Amino acid sequence: MKADKVRDLDTNELTRQLGEIDEQIFRLQFQMSMGQMDGLKKVRAIKKDRARIHTVLRERALAPAAEEKK
Image (cartoon, rainbow, N blue to C red; front, side, top):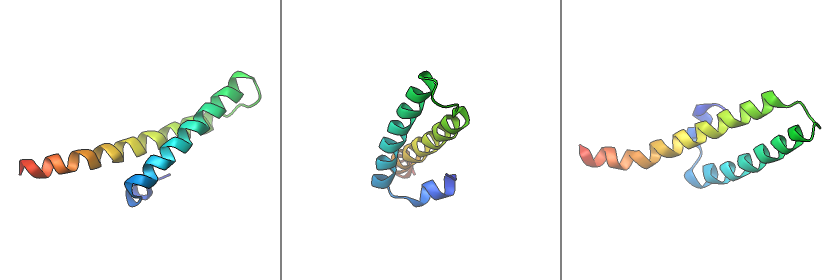
């Protein structure tokens, strides 16, 4: 998922996607530990998407504080 696409989503949608991503990461790591799959690249890509979502949420949280300082 690109950063532009993440920024277009509203906060509730981002929060919902974070929950789905966390569950997906858990399942993939469990499968990897059981030796059922070799999806290391997929896990890395999902973790990067998760980080992008957290970054956008943090930017939105800090935006009102930055406007108050002006």
